[in-house]
Structure formats: structure tokens, C-alpha cells
Length: 170
Length: 101
Image (tube, rainbow over all chains, first blue to last red; front, top):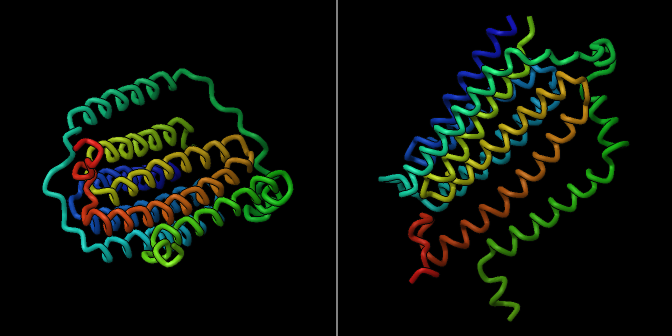
């Protein structure tokens, strides 16, 4: 049963990620990425990360992708007629690294199985509770740094995107 | 019964490679940023899979930080694209060759 869900999600994720790169119209690329985000959220649910699945849908699909679509509509971009001239180099790189990943998969059949920890501890306390406790105790300082990153990004985006903010100050 | 960890690694490796190839072959900067999102998602899949298999919640916490970085990257990146479109009226990277001329 786990395998069925995994292969469904993995097939859709792989297919839509190829579509994101291959489709010429950026709106279609963004919509393919939306489908991929939903299936990644489904994969998180099968990995018992339910809170991250919700965050994935709310933040990625809800906020980030809407921002992308907004900019695509704002700039009224036509679809690309051709790919970049780097296509042969990129194809070579992709094929080489893909074979490397496949070789690693073949080797991993003989690798020892990963020792599983105790599943009971994870089942007693909820997923959200565990993340919250780790986030606000062990990772409190990185959490605050993350808020600083968001502040810097917010100010930077306003400065960059506002047209006359520099002319009026000069 | 359970899905082996290597399956998740191969999936995330494939998605990451797709992102790398997308960054290299696309001309539209918006699609290049979408490919960067693909790569970030591939690392997130890795983090969550390892977090499940080692029963360490730290992996899921790191996904949060990756999410924060992704949000910041999108905000600044799209602002740069809008500024670029305003000055050059083009967002195709092979037409942005001011330093070459």
C-alpha cells in the first residue's frame, strides 16, 4: 500500500517537474509546478510530516506560486520560441548525473538497511507539537535569523520594485 | 513493507537534476526561478525522508528554514525581474548582454 502511494506521488512529481522545464508558456509551467507542490505535500503525508504538508500547500502553493503567476500576468510574457543555446551542455550534464543517480540506486540494493528508531515516541506526541518544541527550544536562534532574512527580503523587494523611490529621495 | 529510503533519494535527485537542466536551458528568468523552486523542493523531500527514517524532527525543522529562504528568494527575485523588465523591457537572459557590447 505504501508502495502504491509512493509510486503514484513519485510519478506525478517527476512528470510535472519535467513539464515545468519543458513547457514553453510560463503560465503552464507555473501550473505544472502547482500540481507538483500538491503531490509533494501528499508525499509528506505518507512520510508522517502532516504539518509540513499543510505548510507546503499554504506557503508554496498559496503564497509563492500566486506571486509567480501575478508577475507573469503583470509582465504579459509571450511564450518562448526556442530554448537557450546551452541546451547540448545541459543535456550532457543531465544525462551524466542521471546515470550517476541510477548507479547509486543499483549500489544501494547491497547497502545495509537504515536502522529505524522507536516509532512509539513519534506516535505519542503529535507531529506539530514535536516540530514546535524543537523549533522554539533547540532551533530558537536560527528561527530568529529566519525572521531577519524575511525582513531583509521584504525591504529589498520594496526598494527594488518601487519605481520612483530613488528619484524622490535624490 | 515500507518504501526504502533510496527511492526517496532517487526521486529527489531526479527532481533536482530537472531543476539544474531547467536553469541551464530556459531563457525566461521567471521559469529559471521556478526551476530553482524545483531544486529547493527536491532538497525538502530529502530532508523529510531522512527525518522520517532516523526519527529526528530536526529534518522537518530545516524544511522550515528552506521554506523561509525560498520565500525570501521569490520576493527579491521577482522584484529584480520587475526592475529588469522596466529598464530593458525583456526578461530573456540571452538578450541581457549589456556587458558584452
